[in-house]
Length: 246
Image (cartoon, rainbow, N blue to C red):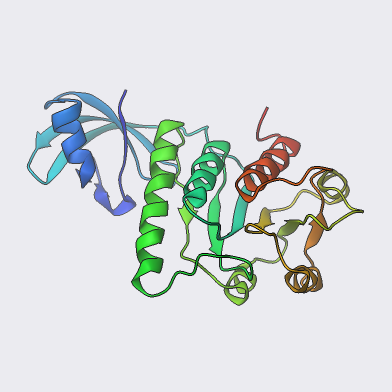
């Protein structure tokens, strides 16, 4: 059955309002009509069975028939803080992390980030990345869409980490402590933050600052992973350890 995400405010009592590009997709691509069934999701975990009640040029009104229990969302919230990479690698990271079950993605303006975003480009890129997350969530049948925040700097990210969160920083220069060892030796956290460097990794100064903040610097193994591989790989390991995958 076709699935469509709407904003929570687009659900009012027994009616859901679909707007934007999905209107064209429903009417011209899927050629759906009044009375056809579909699934409506609000992006925060609520899933509704619905049917098309009215088709207009700019919006489609759907009658909500009942709410389902969402079982596709991990209980553990993992935030991926990704050093901004080059090209379209960020889109690949967002797509794969969404499929795996990431809760939030924060692009980080790291010291070795080659791409520099300023002004309106920051907002434009965030909107594009959020659309990538939504399409990936739709494709893998998630009930929620991960939030992709705007590009942030270190101080902004550090200020937003809640107390009790487990903060992990895979780093290529770490030789002693493995991710597996940390996960086995800490109590089950309320949230997990994963910090991944851009191409070239984090600088020694960034790594030192992170450790001062209580980050766990860890190694993922003997091979150096590309930035677009490291985030999804570490995310998989964490979710598997806590029973959210496999």
